[in-house]
Length: 298
Length: 219
Image 1 (spheres, rainbow over the protein chains, first blue to last red):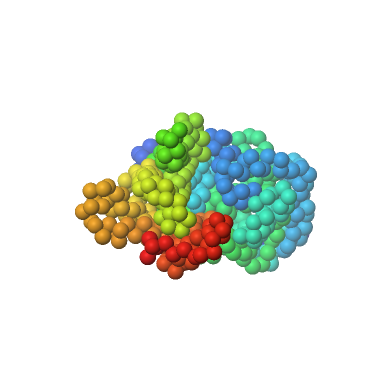
Image 2: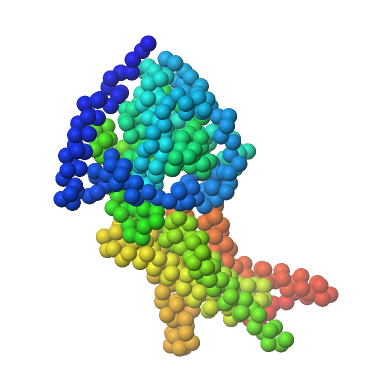
């Protein structure tokens, strides 16, 4: 049995030091010296007060497989078949496995994760996901040392997903993470929302959620996960390489030709909010990019 | 009945041009402006402004080429309605979306090329709306017509604004662009003459004549 190289896993020490940091910052928070987002990242009770209503989460969706209009995704996706469903995991792994979605749900305990979601289009939500840590999932298939990246793929079925008839995009939807990003504790495979199974418009039956990156990285309705040696070429990197990079970390300092990235509108709020680096999760993920020029690696 | 015959087209114009605004207000009170109402209002007012701008541009060719004289009198109202929606669009963006925040606006307007051309289109429409009255027409004389050619600039800027706003599928904005190009082409003397000749010839043939007409008012 091959072990995952220790460099690929978030070291426990960092995890623990983060906890300690959160404790310290939490204690300081009463002085209101810090923007709330900075320490609320791990504080679900704080975020719970800001939850976006279910109606907005399930009726305002970017899911181009159904429609490029956010309001049309929900009605168009209602007949979407999510059972039977399997997720095929392969590539540089010791144990290539095809998971049935029901087995997968039983095998991995689901936990609630309340995360901010920041869309590259300048709007944001706070969503209570149910899901499993991606790291735990990947450990089961045992990535080999050759595995450097994780490549995710959405179902391709234009009969069910009419948006895939459009030739403006290279279907199927592909997204990717560096292995150490995928192993970060924040990354989850979500299967539920507000305590219920994911509705089709939110990426049923299983999707990625990486809250420190722009929403399009959190690929929906996954059927295939491959551990690969080189950087996957995502759908958006192909569609507009000057606008969408591989990393797509939420970064108020990196401008976009169309949308303000320094501020955002939280759905349901009137005033704009300042966008936080890494969407407020810098403490958990900034170390992943130490020494990298994030303006270049946008 | 005679009254209706004379007024149905202006009435239709006013009702048609105010309907998008009425629908927006209706949708607002019925919570039908999506989860992101400010952005949705921005889209809707912008799209309506563009459609009305194209319709404004269509009035003159419809008269000179197709002989639909009655549409000429609609041009002014359509143009002013286009300006109304462009103003609502601009105010929604600046006021509702960016709350007149100078820092955000500096980034929102001057650092985004799409916003810059959109803003320019609005600025091009502004003098046209101001000088749309009979008084200004008289005062400006020949220059009035020259000034009002700015509407083509505004239309092209609005189309570019739209093209730069879409993520990838540029078919819709380019369709508007194509219509503007055709409408501009219809004003070129040679194209206009050819089309008028063709129309006259067809009309005469229907009447049993073979003579080609060159109406005097087409210089």
